[in-house]
Length: 123
Length: 117
Image (tube, rainbow over all chains, first blue to last red):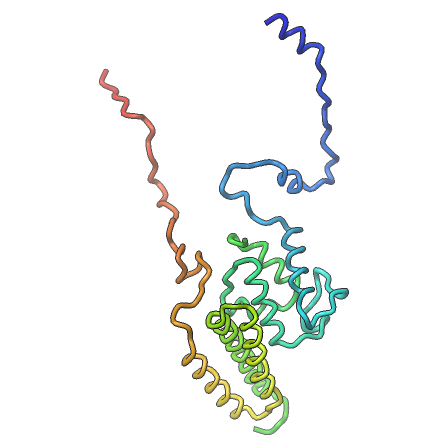
């Protein structure tokens, strides 16, 4: 026991100071393994990345114009039927089932990201 | 029924457009249900899109109504008997599989301890 105490007295572990308050808590949580069943909600940046990837891979869309707050019909010049197709592609990407009335209202990237982020079962 | 853009005309057109969008969405999902393989689905989806685009320019309200009704009848005729539904959605396999237990009920972990004193 004395040896152990002596050894421990001489070992110094480097202390990591946490970064300043500007860091997002969620990016640190992604390195922790939390064992609750409710911690697998998507982070906002993941949702944004995946939504933008889906929109950029749409053949009628110019990928350089896609930003997180772009409107499908006004900014990207898409048709209302194209809007329906994009919402279907988002449903397939996130394994969601969006009711028809809700899906009709999703008109821009903003609304899509908000809806998916607030959906509890977004995969 | 003059061609003037009155509020009633616009409201009716907007309702028709919403019906068309919902019909297109359901028809597209149905197409995916029937054509499981992706390359077949893409061909069928573009055929469906051509059908919708061919009637895009129609202006007369009654003709549009008739076309929407005919389209919905075709959709109802071709509906898949076993559509793919996301498991947690109504109709899916996981729907209400693990409902939340009612509040106020809990298990008392006393492991059979008896307080007989």
